[in-house]
Structure formats: structure tokens, C-alpha cells
Length: 125
Image 1 (cartoon, rainbow, N blue to C red):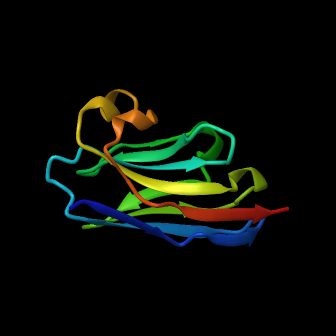
Image 2 (cartoon, rainbow, N blue to C red; image 1 turned 135 degrees about the vertical axis):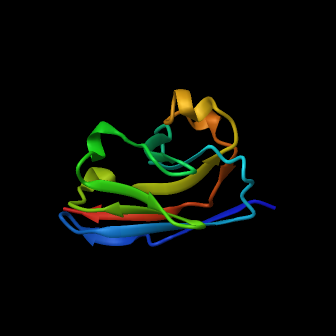
């Protein structure tokens, strides 16, 4: 059974940093993309960053480019978040895709098959 477990969220002041982790269990070898999404109550979930499951290219939402870095090792996906802003406040979710759909549009949520439970990030001004 595939499981994605996020951790590392918390409360920080603007300008601070956090590192999110997502431990993946039982991911198939056919996994194509891994990504971070975030959602604020009342708003649609949005893609933050993504990477191919086998490494290589990375993709970022414009608002986080230069501040966030997505990376991975054997079974853990990371999101290093620097220079945090109040508008980064959200619940952050880890996601894994099994199809090639994510290769066309990495930030489209329906292209991902598995999701974690989320971790809350709160940035105060």
C-alpha cells in the first residue's frame, strides 16, 4: 500500500526557513513525477514544485522560484523553503504520479495518483 507522509511544517516569521519532508512507502517503480502542492481554505490547490521520480528536471511555481528547492533521495522528497512570506501560508501536500500526464502539466492535481495527509505551514508578518 502506497503511503506518503509529510513532516516539517510549523510556524515561522517572514524571512524564515522550513524544510518539508515526505517519506514514501511502497511507491511503484513506475512512478513518474513527485510534487509538492499547497492549499489555503477556500482556494484551489496549487502546484508548488515538482521533479521527475528518477531525478533530473525540476519545476516551480513562479511565486516560489529562487526561494524553494525540491529534491529527493532514495525514498524521501524534500522541499526547502527559504525567505518565507505570509502568502506561503498553506497546508502543503506531497503527491506522486504514475502516469505520463504529469510530464505534460506538472502542476495539474488530477495527474497525481497518491497524496499525503498534508503539513501546515504558517508564516507570520
